[in-house]
Image 1 (spheres, helix red, strand yellow):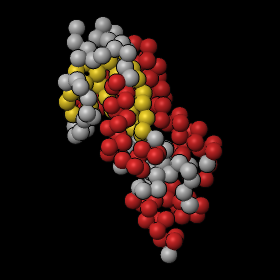
Image 2 (cartoon, one colour; image 1 turned 30 degrees about the horizontal axis):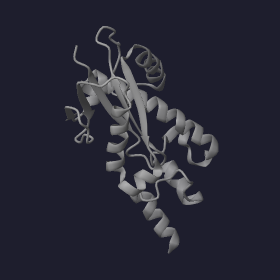
Image 3 (cartoon, helix red, strand yellow; image 1 turned 60 degrees about the horizontal axis):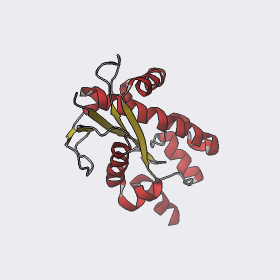
Image 4 (cartoon, helix red, strand yellow; image 1 turned 90 degrees about the vertical axis):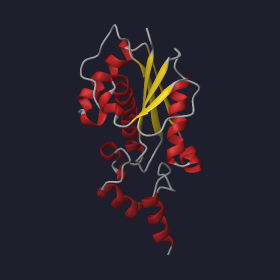
Length: 191
């Protein structure tokens, strides 16, 4: 049996907090119904599926790229670092890795980048669901620390309300200071 790993990330386009990446090897003998791109599922459905994915998968691993890495490497390379960590963190070595998107991390395994892979490949869908559920939980916890930004709703993405809070309160330690809209805001405040 060929062990196929799906890998995806969550938080790349966010203006705050870490990027989460997940790698999943599904068990063909234990199929999971309802897998889809995490963005197209309700929070309740994602939560339910996350538990099933963790229980039925042959292996799964979540990894992160922290704020310092995002700011030093840039968001693109930090995403690839998080993905590489997730894949290499699996306790089972996959035979092939399928990654959502145009780019794939530098790994010593056969791999392929698939645009819209989270809509087409069940193992990538599973990875996107796990990563989103865990990152959303972290953002809910960050909301308790910094409630003015609405992290429990926007998950760090720069909605009009989030941008307004940034104008009023400035960034908190979780914000990506080199993210263009935040950097522009900081530069405007300096003038």
